[in-house]
Amino acid sequence: SAEAPTLLLRKQTTFQQRFQAVLNFQPSKAGYEAGIVVWYSLFSYASIGVTIASEGPDAGKRVLLLRSPTDKIGVLTVSCPFTSSDDC
Image (cartoon, rainbow, N blue to C red; front, top):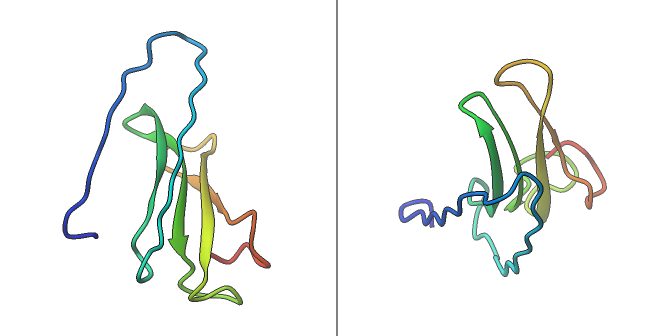
């Protein structure tokens, strides 16, 4: 739950690296999210996570949420590639 977050960190050991994870997460309400974050710097990161859409045609449904860095500090693009809408 949001009241008891869990974090597992693993330092990158090579410049190019592959990893995989298995995630079984059924969020109980919007705002709860579980996934993977790739941290570039204090101002930029990318993530993929499972959450519940809070608005749009998929509101209340479980969605896959992608966040990707842009060329502007602190600005991310957000998309939901496996839903009927990009309005997460």
